[in-house]
Image 1 (cartoon, rainbow, N blue to C red):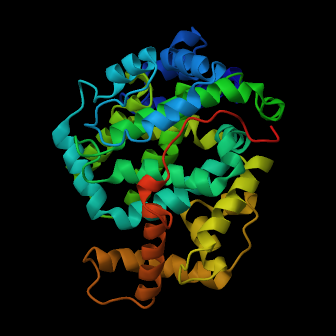
Image 2: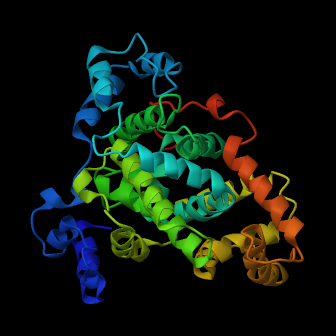
Length: 399
């Protein structure tokens, strides 16, 4: 979506009353809607310091050596590995820490919340957010034409590594791994920003000149954190106000670590919902690249023994996202499975949460399905640490 059309969307959001939610629309959205300076528009903000560093590493052929050196850098408390170029080491030393405003009490509560609600989180991240990414045009084309798009099993495993490390009980603790994982991901994003503009296929599919802006990362956040929070509410999963606040704070810290400026990060779930309605919902659309990615992702998922039919898997994706998205992705219908999911999944949740005294019919079917998706999310069939996040050195081979 171009900056002009995006501003039109923001103006439309204001016209529809999104700005009526007190404090819901951040300053950048108001200024963008008014057509003011692009300096406060997140789609014109990238990650300049790390972008320059990684571009120099790519152009000088140093990335393979950097990847080799960083392989042993895993835990948040690990010292930086030796063998890194001095300017990269200085940069990582500066950013490899929590922001000053991070609340460790909230982060620990978020970790406990992830543990208590992991059943639903795995399902929503895997079959919701993961498949939604294929109908976010910029994200789908960036993934497809980058190196990762040529090997989706490896790309998915690296994405699972990111999600696994974020969901771990010790994610932000010294013994955890997410701070390091986030910074490695930030380096990957910088490489993609340098490499993708060289691809004529990517340029033909996009209006933007440089991928993965702060705005693009915010869109991805809304397809993950905001979407998951909203579905938990829709599914009537019990959450305390403190749980919800902690879950948001975890994501606030996460996207800060990915290089999003603090001024762009939603302060409340009301603000996140309003921002999502402005920047995510209007842009969802199928693309040839996205359809191919969805086919590959669902194919990888179907290779695991889920205990259900492929029709059930397709219908669960439709249930979590929408029939419109299911039609975009050309997912064949299974109306018997759809009826079972519509009635069985709410009952499954109610029983698990102690809100239904009698085990519903189909409980074990859903339970086996959930466990299989969880195992796929947790390790993709291997140890999470066996698929390290590495800086790419090229685009998709045919790009």
